[in-house]
Length: 346
View 1 (cartoon, rainbow, N blue to C red):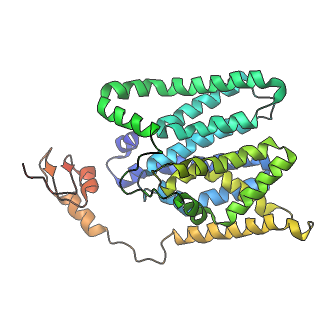
View 2: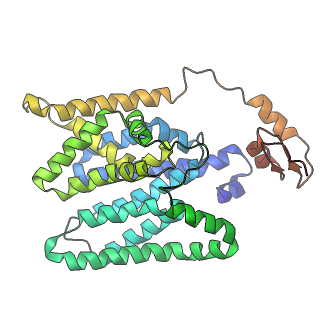
């Protein structure tokens, strides 16, 4: 974002350009992963679901807080997953382990330990009894590579910002005990968020595919189910909850939904038609949700008046402003510090 502002100037569009680029690349990665695993038809539907999903477009366009973080984090997680799935089981080399670890390290720099999901999926997908020692050693190499990528930044922040780093590290290791302001800590909030974002029919799809993977002992399907479900399971136990956290699972869900919707309908018995039916329902739900997120049926917010007032305001360089409801916008356009609350009496 800083580079974009430097190149294009101090403008709202310059802030959004990186999010648009990374979000577009994420759609491409969904297509590439799905094509590798399931074929062209399913890949096109999966990347279409990714490209239109209303919450992801909100993140890419900067309508939600942590937009840049979430968008870049999803991209690097998908990049790691691309390296995980680009080769058949049994063909994963030491180089592949190292590259997957590097991508995971970049994801860690975006959003800490949830990025380790990539290594979990890699371990499950490429595990083979005959070569388990090599796989364990390779997985250890991936983990070391991830830490090596993150280490310089981690060491820097500990030395440059000791107080903030100490607080952040404590928050990382105590997510199941602490909560923060404006977050929902109820145990079931992610269960409802999952249904609201992907359709409650997605639960049935994941359950049917999980049963299929266990019945056929198919590690590929099991890896996709873990990618889709593990964040929901672990994050639900944490006190800090936000709906955007679930999007680490979104590409896997789009692929599973596309697979379900593409399943044969006419040539299967009635008892096997539940999977494609749920796929159709999820596709229609995501399409409807995405249309709603276009905000076509809500009155448009009139931002020009207050935006012009902020841009034209004359503030003293380095001033501190209190009791300002649009503090973020003021600090964007002016070299001042602004707070939404009143100044405390000394």
